[in-house]
Image (cartoon, rainbow, N blue to C red; front, side, top):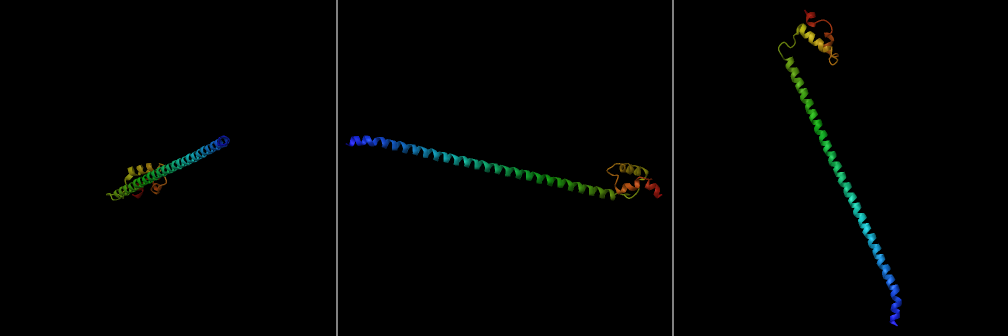
Length: 137
């Protein structure tokens, strides 16, 4: 009697084992897919962080270069102003610095005053007329 009973139970038992196997495979696939999705999400996050770090590094380089350029420009401007002051002091402290240069000097200054750059300079106002050295005599 055990023989027919085993035969009768073998069908549902095999079917149950087959279903259990399919369930195990399905769970394994879902778990593997979930792990793979997690790994992809981690890879995307790592790539995002690398990109953010690269942007920060590039921004720092640009800021540093801009500051260096501004410092160089400021130094050039300071050097130019110092040179201008030294030249002005040299000219004003030269012998006969306040003396008139005569007609030739008047002609030279008048020529400069005809240029747009110097036209509105206060020293050009009196040079449009006669030679100031001749008028002073």
